[in-house]
Structure formats: C-alpha cells, structure tokens
Length: 83
Image (cartoon, rainbow, N blue to C red; front, top):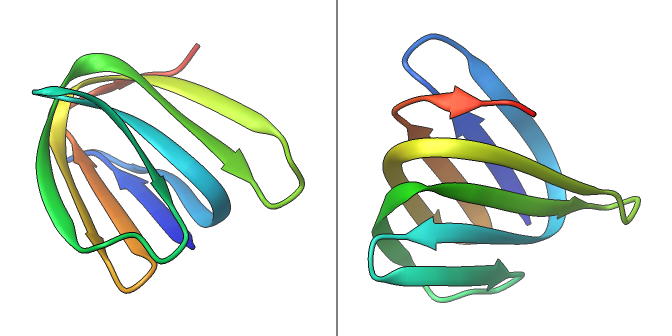
C-alpha cells in the first residue's frame, strides 16, 4: 500500500507501507492493504505507520483529512509536529 502525507507547506512522507493508524474524529482506525475506500476527517493526535522494512514511525497531526482508495492512502494534514 502507498502512503502520502502532505501539509499546505511540505510533503512529509511518501512511500510503501504495511499499515497505517490514524486519529479519526470518531476514534482511531487502522488501514491495511486492500482496505475498502473511505474518506475520514482527522483529529489532533498520533498518526503511525509501518514501512516495508518493518520500521515504526509516528508523527503528530493537528487535524486534516485522509482518503483511502485502491491501496493508495493520502493524508492532507493541517499541520504536522514531527517528534
């Protein structure tokens, strides 16, 4: 699955991942390969993802939107605080 995380100012991440977990406005949720198409708003919280080499990454987003379709996940974050 392919993940892209962008803000109005920059591209934060782009690449293949095994899974991603998002701070949805109605609760956190995880996306895996072949996930059904969805669009969800994001609250402030931790977005985590596992890259193909099994490395875990976490960033904090300050709201935004995520779209999942055809094994492509696009996150439009209002702001990202990298830790």
